[in-house]
Image 1 (cartoon, rainbow, N blue to C red):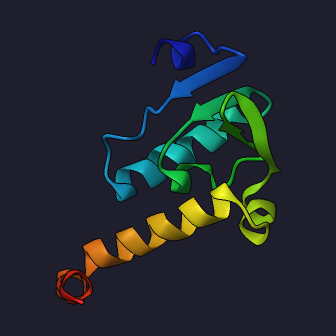
Image 2: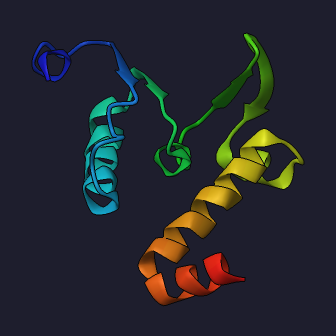
Length: 107
């Protein structure tokens, strides 16, 4: 919050959105995009939905850059980002439909 008040040129968020629901995350990211124009914003995130509109995503694997690009590029490439993004989307869909989740677990 202090970075926003002092009009910082660089903002680093370290998994800052992990404890909020999807709707709140969307609102925060929308406001952050407006505030962040002309600034450098670095977001470290496990929930990949927070990165879909980033201009550049860097996937770190074992201390090295494993993949690099924007969301659209990375979901087209075979690799960790695409696999994890699909997994998280499926997980979110199952959370929205508990009866389907039960069938998937029973199968």
